[in-house]
Image (tube, rainbow, N blue to C red; front, side):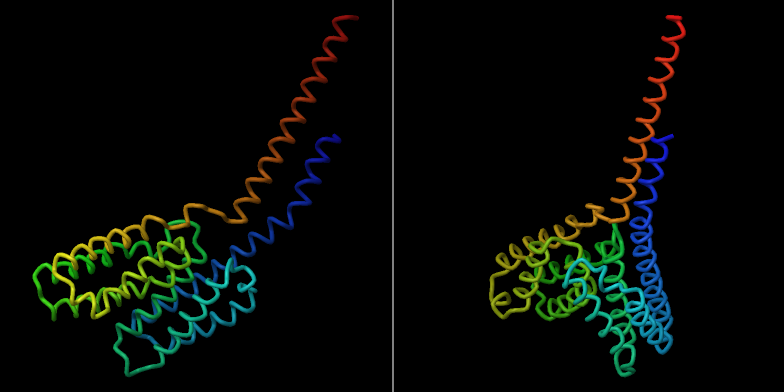
Length: 261
């Protein structure tokens, strides 16, 4: 009985920790759903309603103390900047519809990157981004300067959508390398290179871009809730095993005593 009482004491002591971790997860789950609702409204060009939902997100973010749950200043910066950017473009009726939607997508991806523990949504944009980069390479191969400028802008627009999320989920050295590559692409010096040199640099850039999608940090699965569940489960299993062993030993001793009598 004393062993069983110990087990319940352990569970009772850990219960507030488990509840707190679960509450954090539930809070971010709600914020994730709110950001998705805003995106769906924007996609349907219901921009005023999308704006209202994003304003509601801000209130819930403060109410749920979500800021205290962020892992770094980079996450806070990303969610603040993309939220402000989405709100600003939603109210800018003169901007193209696609651009307004893209800003909401960018914000949606950041919220997911912070909340998700594996396979973040932005990683699913690998195919269109790599295709845009291939089109860029083809314009260089064909020596089409004007087409290169158009393809470059299209590629930059695509990557800009996932860039804040990349910096949340990917090791800094990989994200920084892609930033360097993008800056180099936009310089007059790159356009002055020979075709062979341009292709060589583009092939290197393609490998760096591929590495970004291959080095998502979410595989670490470092959720505090998961850690608490594993720890609690281990303690319970060990305690039950010990209680069972003590009971078995007691029964064995009892039988031995009866045999001796």
